Length: 316
Image (tube, rainbow, N blue to C red; front, side):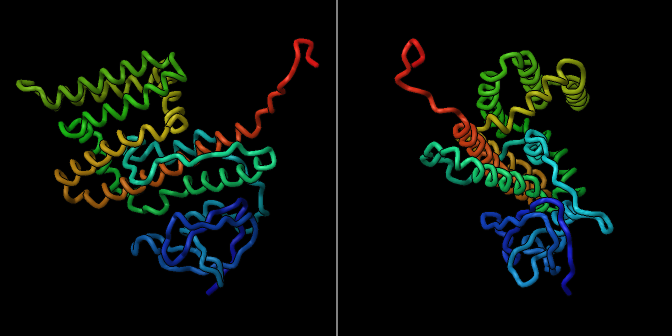
């Protein structure tokens, strides 16, 4: 039976029969008639709301997150800070950067004219909306199984077959971040040193009380990330991660993601399914982040004033 819902901000919809994220339609704020339909992505996941008489829909939590509470007038949408928008999803996805299986070749781009800026901004808003709602397509990632997976993942990074590609991935990203923020070098050096100590604590022979040493190093890492100047630098580092991600970083992420999923699935078969979900979600998130960065670059380029050629020294 159809019902009505009022949303206070635009919402991106997907095919209600397939749930494919590469097909979409964006609807503005307003009042809509909707029907409740089964989740097309996961049978046991939350139901979807779809537009009555149309094939477009989204997960119930996505609609509810932008819905106007009964009895209240619609309100003007407020912008989510860009860095918060990106980190909301990436912060919980397998150390931020995981597996990429799509084509990273950058298409030829023509410099947009000022008239294109409005259209580009609309595209950017739509992609950010997809990123915000991405984890809603993976209900299992918000439950107890995901918490178990994260605990195992944090240790799996230091497995013999996983740590080398992890360091390769980190090095590629940290190099770009340091190019933009050289003052973060002491923080990254300390963070990398703790990673090396943890790796040795897991694998060197003859270590007594190995678990105690690992626990002490983890506590030291928490202290490093959570106090004083280092905490401020950790926040600055996280804020730069998504914005500095480029196509060239993809191969290292690909290798790391493959090794990590294999290590977790082999050692903990019960977590194989959630490991695959994290892998798939991260793949989609990175693809969206690359698109966001591309759109922001094009918008910035379009806003730059054209250089005046043939100016003389007198300015004529």
